[in-house]
Image (cartoon, rainbow, N blue to C red; front, side, top):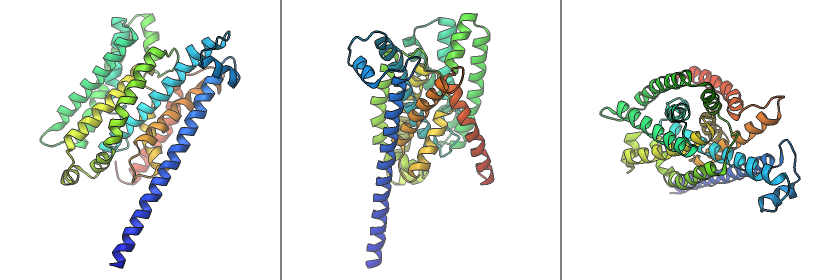
Length: 345
Protein backbone atom coordinates (compact mmCIF):
# COMPACT_ATOMS: atom_id res chain seq x y z
CA UNK A 1 0.00 0.00 0.00
CA UNK A 2 2.82 2.38 0.90
CA UNK A 3 4.58 1.53 -2.36
CA UNK A 4 1.48 2.37 -4.39
CA UNK A 5 1.06 5.61 -2.46
CA UNK A 6 4.69 6.52 -3.15
CA UNK A 7 4.31 5.80 -6.86
CA UNK A 8 1.15 7.89 -7.02
CA UNK A 9 2.87 10.81 -5.29
CA UNK A 10 5.74 10.60 -7.80
CA UNK A 11 3.26 10.65 -10.69
CA UNK A 12 1.44 13.67 -9.22
CA UNK A 13 4.73 15.49 -8.65
CA UNK A 14 5.74 14.80 -12.24
CA UNK A 15 2.43 16.22 -13.49
CA UNK A 16 2.89 19.34 -11.35
CA UNK A 17 6.40 19.81 -12.73
CA UNK A 18 5.13 19.50 -16.31
CA UNK A 19 2.37 22.05 -15.62
CA UNK A 20 4.88 24.48 -14.09
CA UNK A 21 7.21 24.06 -17.06
CA UNK A 22 4.32 24.55 -19.49
CA UNK A 23 3.24 27.74 -17.68
CA UNK A 24 6.80 29.09 -17.53
CA UNK A 25 7.60 28.40 -21.19
CA UNK A 26 4.25 29.75 -22.38
CA UNK A 27 4.74 32.92 -20.33
CA UNK A 28 8.24 33.45 -21.76
CA UNK A 29 6.94 32.93 -25.32
CA UNK A 30 4.14 35.45 -24.73
CA UNK A 31 6.59 38.03 -23.36
CA UNK A 32 8.93 37.46 -26.32
CA UNK A 33 6.02 37.88 -28.75
CA UNK A 34 5.04 41.17 -27.06
CA UNK A 35 8.63 42.44 -27.34
CA UNK A 36 8.81 41.52 -31.04
CA UNK A 37 5.42 43.13 -31.70
CA UNK A 38 6.61 46.35 -30.03
CA UNK A 39 9.79 46.26 -32.13
CA UNK A 40 7.76 45.96 -35.32
CA UNK A 41 5.68 48.99 -34.34
CA UNK A 42 8.67 51.11 -33.34
CA UNK A 43 11.14 50.28 -36.10
CA UNK A 44 11.04 51.27 -39.76
CA UNK A 45 12.38 53.95 -42.07
CA UNK A 46 11.59 56.29 -39.19
CA UNK A 47 12.06 55.08 -35.61
CA UNK A 48 9.27 56.55 -33.50
CA UNK A 49 9.41 56.96 -29.70
CA UNK A 50 7.17 54.71 -27.62
CA UNK A 51 4.87 57.56 -26.59
CA UNK A 52 4.31 58.59 -30.23
CA UNK A 53 3.39 55.01 -31.21
CA UNK A 54 0.98 54.69 -28.27
CA UNK A 55 -0.68 58.03 -29.05
CA UNK A 56 -1.03 57.03 -32.72
CA UNK A 57 -2.62 53.71 -31.77
CA UNK A 58 -5.06 55.57 -29.51
CA UNK A 59 -6.18 57.70 -32.47
CA UNK A 60 -4.32 60.96 -31.86
CA UNK A 61 -3.46 62.78 -35.08
CA UNK A 62 0.34 62.91 -35.44
CA UNK A 63 1.75 63.91 -38.81
CA UNK A 64 3.49 60.98 -40.49
CA UNK A 65 3.21 58.66 -37.52
CA UNK A 66 -0.47 57.82 -37.97
CA UNK A 67 -0.03 56.47 -41.47
CA UNK A 68 3.21 54.62 -40.70
CA UNK A 69 1.98 53.03 -37.47
CA UNK A 70 -1.71 52.37 -38.12
CA UNK A 71 -1.72 51.71 -41.87
CA UNK A 72 1.61 49.96 -42.43
CA UNK A 73 3.18 48.64 -39.23
CA UNK A 74 0.13 47.55 -37.21
CA UNK A 75 -1.42 45.35 -39.97
CA UNK A 76 2.04 43.95 -40.76
CA UNK A 77 2.65 43.07 -37.12
CA UNK A 78 -0.80 41.52 -36.62
CA UNK A 79 -0.59 39.48 -39.83
CA UNK A 80 2.81 38.13 -38.79
CA UNK A 81 1.60 37.35 -35.27
CA UNK A 82 -1.60 35.54 -36.23
CA UNK A 83 -0.30 33.90 -39.42
CA UNK A 84 2.71 32.54 -37.52
CA UNK A 85 0.41 31.28 -34.77
CA UNK A 86 -1.84 29.60 -37.35
CA UNK A 87 1.05 27.93 -39.18
CA UNK A 88 2.55 26.74 -35.88
CA UNK A 89 -0.69 25.26 -34.54
CA UNK A 90 -1.66 23.59 -37.83
CA UNK A 91 1.79 22.09 -38.27
CA UNK A 92 1.79 20.71 -34.72
CA UNK A 93 -1.68 19.18 -35.20
CA UNK A 94 -0.65 17.34 -38.37
CA UNK A 95 2.67 16.18 -36.95
CA UNK A 96 0.92 14.86 -33.83
CA UNK A 97 -1.98 13.15 -35.59
CA UNK A 98 0.31 11.49 -38.14
CA UNK A 99 3.05 10.81 -35.57
CA UNK A 100 5.75 12.05 -37.95
CA UNK A 101 7.77 15.30 -37.65
CA UNK A 102 7.92 15.52 -41.47
CA UNK A 103 4.12 15.40 -41.83
CA UNK A 104 3.32 19.09 -41.98
CA UNK A 105 0.85 20.93 -44.25
CA UNK A 106 3.63 22.10 -46.60
CA UNK A 107 4.92 18.62 -47.39
CA UNK A 108 1.43 17.04 -47.49
CA UNK A 109 0.25 19.45 -50.19
CA UNK A 110 -2.37 21.31 -48.16
CA UNK A 111 -0.54 24.61 -48.46
CA UNK A 112 -0.05 23.91 -52.18
CA UNK A 113 -3.80 23.32 -52.53
CA UNK A 114 -4.51 26.72 -51.04
CA UNK A 115 -1.73 28.23 -53.15
CA UNK A 116 -3.08 26.85 -56.44
CA UNK A 117 -6.49 28.36 -55.74
CA UNK A 118 -4.97 31.69 -54.72
CA UNK A 119 -2.57 31.87 -57.69
CA UNK A 120 -5.44 31.00 -60.07
CA UNK A 121 -7.46 33.89 -58.61
CA UNK A 122 -4.46 36.26 -58.88
CA UNK A 123 -3.27 35.36 -62.38
CA UNK A 124 -6.47 34.34 -64.18
CA UNK A 125 -9.44 35.88 -62.41
CA UNK A 126 -7.66 39.01 -61.05
CA UNK A 127 -9.78 38.64 -57.93
CA UNK A 128 -9.92 40.74 -54.79
CA UNK A 129 -8.23 39.69 -51.56
CA UNK A 130 -11.52 38.48 -50.07
CA UNK A 131 -12.14 36.16 -53.03
CA UNK A 132 -8.54 34.92 -52.80
CA UNK A 133 -9.07 34.10 -49.11
CA UNK A 134 -12.25 32.14 -49.83
CA UNK A 135 -10.59 30.29 -52.71
CA UNK A 136 -7.58 29.42 -50.53
CA UNK A 137 -9.84 27.85 -47.89
CA UNK A 138 -11.80 25.90 -50.50
CA UNK A 139 -8.59 24.75 -52.19
CA UNK A 140 -7.14 23.53 -48.90
CA UNK A 141 -10.33 21.69 -47.93
CA UNK A 142 -10.64 20.00 -51.33
CA UNK A 143 -7.02 18.88 -51.08
CA UNK A 144 -7.62 17.35 -47.64
CA UNK A 145 -10.79 15.58 -48.81
CA UNK A 146 -8.98 14.08 -51.81
CA UNK A 147 -6.07 12.99 -49.63
CA UNK A 148 -8.37 11.42 -47.05
CA UNK A 149 -10.40 9.52 -49.66
CA UNK A 150 -7.33 8.21 -51.49
CA UNK A 151 -5.61 7.12 -48.27
CA UNK A 152 -8.66 5.72 -46.47
CA UNK A 153 -8.97 2.13 -47.68
CA UNK A 154 -10.57 -0.17 -45.10
CA UNK A 155 -8.69 1.53 -42.27
CA UNK A 156 -6.99 4.91 -41.95
CA UNK A 157 -3.30 4.59 -42.83
CA UNK A 158 -0.77 7.25 -41.80
CA UNK A 159 1.87 6.02 -44.23
CA UNK A 160 -0.58 5.97 -47.11
CA UNK A 161 -1.79 9.49 -46.28
CA UNK A 162 1.77 10.87 -46.27
CA UNK A 163 2.60 9.21 -49.60
CA UNK A 164 -0.63 10.46 -51.18
CA UNK A 165 0.03 13.94 -49.78
CA UNK A 166 3.53 14.09 -51.23
CA UNK A 167 2.20 13.01 -54.62
CA UNK A 168 -0.58 15.61 -54.53
CA UNK A 169 1.91 18.29 -53.53
CA UNK A 170 4.09 17.50 -56.57
CA UNK A 171 1.07 17.71 -58.85
CA UNK A 172 -0.15 21.00 -57.33
CA UNK A 173 3.32 22.56 -57.48
CA UNK A 174 3.39 21.70 -61.19
CA UNK A 175 -0.01 23.39 -61.58
CA UNK A 176 1.33 26.53 -59.87
CA UNK A 177 4.33 26.59 -62.24
CA UNK A 178 1.98 26.20 -65.24
CA UNK A 179 -0.23 29.08 -64.08
CA UNK A 180 2.78 31.35 -63.63
CA UNK A 181 4.24 30.46 -67.04
CA UNK A 182 0.92 31.25 -68.72
CA UNK A 183 0.44 34.54 -66.88
CA UNK A 184 1.16 38.06 -67.98
CA UNK A 185 4.10 40.09 -66.72
CA UNK A 186 2.12 42.01 -64.09
CA UNK A 187 0.39 38.91 -62.73
CA UNK A 188 3.68 37.00 -62.49
CA UNK A 189 5.21 39.63 -60.21
CA UNK A 190 2.21 39.60 -57.88
CA UNK A 191 2.00 35.80 -57.79
CA UNK A 192 5.72 35.31 -57.12
CA UNK A 193 5.68 37.94 -54.39
CA UNK A 194 2.73 36.18 -52.78
CA UNK A 195 4.30 32.71 -53.15
CA UNK A 196 7.50 33.83 -51.43
CA UNK A 197 5.55 34.54 -48.23
CA UNK A 198 5.51 38.20 -47.34
CA UNK A 199 3.96 40.59 -44.82
CA UNK A 200 4.33 43.54 -47.22
CA UNK A 201 1.11 45.33 -48.02
CA UNK A 202 -0.90 43.71 -45.22
CA UNK A 203 -4.25 45.39 -44.61
CA UNK A 204 -6.43 45.42 -41.52
CA UNK A 205 -9.44 44.14 -43.49
CA UNK A 206 -7.49 40.97 -44.35
CA UNK A 207 -5.96 40.57 -40.90
CA UNK A 208 -9.37 40.77 -39.17
CA UNK A 209 -10.56 37.61 -40.95
CA UNK A 210 -7.40 35.77 -39.91
CA UNK A 211 -7.79 36.98 -36.32
CA UNK A 212 -11.40 35.79 -36.28
CA UNK A 213 -10.41 32.32 -37.53
CA UNK A 214 -7.73 32.03 -34.83
CA UNK A 215 -10.20 33.11 -32.14
CA UNK A 216 -12.82 30.61 -33.35
CA UNK A 217 -10.70 27.51 -34.01
CA UNK A 218 -7.97 27.71 -31.35
CA UNK A 219 -10.38 27.05 -28.43
CA UNK A 220 -11.78 24.04 -30.33
CA UNK A 221 -8.29 22.61 -30.71
CA UNK A 222 -7.44 23.27 -27.07
CA UNK A 223 -10.62 21.51 -25.95
CA UNK A 224 -9.66 18.47 -28.05
CA UNK A 225 -6.01 18.51 -26.97
CA UNK A 226 -6.50 15.62 -24.52
CA UNK A 227 -7.94 13.49 -27.32
CA UNK A 228 -5.07 14.56 -29.57
CA UNK A 229 -2.61 13.14 -27.05
CA UNK A 230 -4.52 9.85 -27.11
CA UNK A 231 -4.42 9.73 -30.91
CA UNK A 232 -0.62 9.63 -30.64
CA UNK A 233 -0.98 6.19 -29.03
CA UNK A 234 -2.58 4.76 -32.17
CA UNK A 235 -6.18 4.26 -33.29
CA UNK A 236 -6.73 0.98 -31.46
CA UNK A 237 -5.50 2.29 -28.12
CA UNK A 238 -7.38 5.58 -28.52
CA UNK A 239 -10.60 3.74 -29.41
CA UNK A 240 -10.24 1.49 -26.36
CA UNK A 241 -9.98 4.65 -24.23
CA UNK A 242 -13.30 5.89 -25.61
CA UNK A 243 -12.02 8.34 -28.25
CA UNK A 244 -14.08 8.70 -31.43
CA UNK A 245 -10.94 8.70 -33.54
CA UNK A 246 -12.44 9.60 -36.92
CA UNK A 247 -14.57 12.46 -35.57
CA UNK A 248 -11.73 13.92 -33.49
CA UNK A 249 -9.24 13.57 -36.35
CA UNK A 250 -11.56 15.16 -38.91
CA UNK A 251 -12.46 18.04 -36.54
CA UNK A 252 -8.80 18.79 -35.83
CA UNK A 253 -7.77 18.51 -39.48
CA UNK A 254 -10.61 20.72 -40.74
CA UNK A 255 -9.85 23.32 -38.07
CA UNK A 256 -6.16 23.23 -39.02
CA UNK A 257 -6.98 23.57 -42.72
CA UNK A 258 -9.11 26.66 -42.08
CA UNK A 259 -6.29 28.25 -40.08
CA UNK A 260 -3.55 27.46 -42.56
CA UNK A 261 -5.65 28.38 -45.59
CA UNK A 262 -6.60 31.80 -44.24
CA UNK A 263 -3.03 32.40 -43.08
CA UNK A 264 -1.73 31.39 -46.52
CA UNK A 265 -4.24 33.68 -48.22
CA UNK A 266 -3.16 36.58 -45.98
CA UNK A 267 0.64 36.29 -46.12
CA UNK A 268 1.40 33.63 -48.71
CA UNK A 269 2.95 30.25 -47.82
CA UNK A 270 5.64 31.28 -45.32
CA UNK A 271 8.21 28.49 -45.55
CA UNK A 272 9.01 26.03 -42.75
CA UNK A 273 7.00 27.63 -39.92
CA UNK A 274 4.52 24.74 -39.73
CA UNK A 275 7.51 22.39 -39.88
CA UNK A 276 9.64 24.06 -37.18
CA UNK A 277 7.14 25.21 -34.55
CA UNK A 278 6.00 21.82 -33.27
CA UNK A 279 9.45 20.22 -32.76
CA UNK A 280 10.77 23.38 -31.08
CA UNK A 281 7.75 23.48 -28.74
CA UNK A 282 8.19 19.80 -27.89
CA UNK A 283 11.88 20.37 -27.16
CA UNK A 284 11.39 23.30 -24.79
CA UNK A 285 8.18 22.11 -23.08
CA UNK A 286 8.50 18.32 -23.30
CA UNK A 287 6.67 15.80 -25.46
CA UNK A 288 4.45 14.48 -22.68
CA UNK A 289 2.20 17.55 -22.76
CA UNK A 290 -0.18 18.83 -25.43
CA UNK A 291 1.77 21.72 -26.89
CA UNK A 292 -0.83 23.36 -29.13
CA UNK A 293 -0.51 26.81 -27.52
CA UNK A 294 3.33 26.77 -27.24
CA UNK A 295 3.61 25.60 -30.88
CA UNK A 296 1.43 28.51 -32.01
CA UNK A 297 3.48 30.99 -29.98
CA UNK A 298 6.74 29.55 -31.35
CA UNK A 299 5.36 29.98 -34.87
CA UNK A 300 4.33 33.58 -34.17
CA UNK A 301 7.74 34.43 -32.69
CA UNK A 302 9.56 32.83 -35.63
CA UNK A 303 7.60 34.88 -38.17
CA UNK A 304 7.99 38.16 -36.27
CA UNK A 305 11.72 37.57 -35.69
CA UNK A 306 12.32 36.53 -39.31
CA UNK A 307 10.49 39.60 -40.61
CA UNK A 308 12.61 41.91 -38.49
CA UNK A 309 15.75 40.14 -39.78
CA UNK A 310 14.52 40.45 -43.36
CA UNK A 311 13.82 44.16 -42.97
CA UNK A 312 16.86 45.38 -41.06
CA UNK A 313 19.72 42.85 -41.05
CA UNK A 314 20.73 43.15 -44.71
CA UNK A 315 21.43 45.85 -47.24
CA UNK A 316 18.31 44.83 -49.16
CA UNK A 317 14.97 43.91 -47.65
CA UNK A 318 13.82 40.31 -48.03
CA UNK A 319 10.33 38.82 -47.64
CA UNK A 320 9.81 36.90 -44.42
CA UNK A 321 9.47 33.60 -46.33
CA UNK A 322 13.04 33.90 -47.62
CA UNK A 323 14.41 34.23 -44.08
CA UNK A 324 12.31 31.37 -42.67
CA UNK A 325 13.50 29.23 -45.58
CA UNK A 326 17.11 29.96 -44.67
CA UNK A 327 16.38 29.07 -41.04
CA UNK A 328 14.32 25.97 -41.78
CA UNK A 329 16.35 24.23 -44.47
CA UNK A 330 19.34 23.38 -42.21
CA UNK A 331 16.96 22.03 -39.56
CA UNK A 332 15.24 19.81 -42.14
CA UNK A 333 18.61 18.37 -43.18
CA UNK A 334 19.54 17.79 -39.52
CA UNK A 335 16.20 16.08 -38.83
CA UNK A 336 16.54 13.79 -41.85
CA UNK A 337 20.06 12.79 -40.78
CA UNK A 338 18.92 12.12 -37.21
CA UNK A 339 15.90 10.08 -38.33
CA UNK A 340 18.08 8.10 -40.73
CA UNK A 341 20.52 7.24 -37.92
CA UNK A 342 17.63 6.07 -35.75
CA UNK A 343 16.29 3.93 -38.59
CA UNK A 344 13.04 5.93 -38.83
CA UNK A 345 13.45 6.53 -42.58
